[in-house]
Image (cartoon, rainbow, N blue to C red; front, side):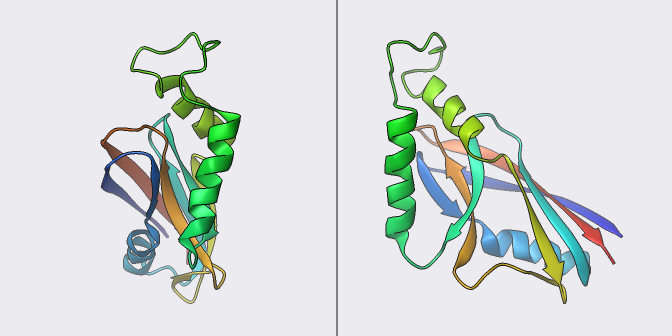
Length: 138
């Protein structure tokens, strides 16, 4: 069995948004008891991550780490058509993940106790993002 849904999210700018419950609903609606959920973001300046869902400081610290690796407005960037955060957002997306694969068991996502699925926006301004969730299994 295969089931696919496209989720849309509005984000206010850079940072993480917990999308675990939205993805879990797609899995539940698919009726798959055992299989895989593939989650893919259709954009080049944001990403997906599975990380700690209990302490928001983890996500803030991840933002600090990635900002050191791909800073806004680096004078060596050539691509800056949409502003100083443009190339940094693309680099951050390439350094992280644009897709995730999560096991499904007993009709639910088999995430660990402290794991959540996050849409990680790398642009500083508001955006509208599409995430494709494909559930495969029986």
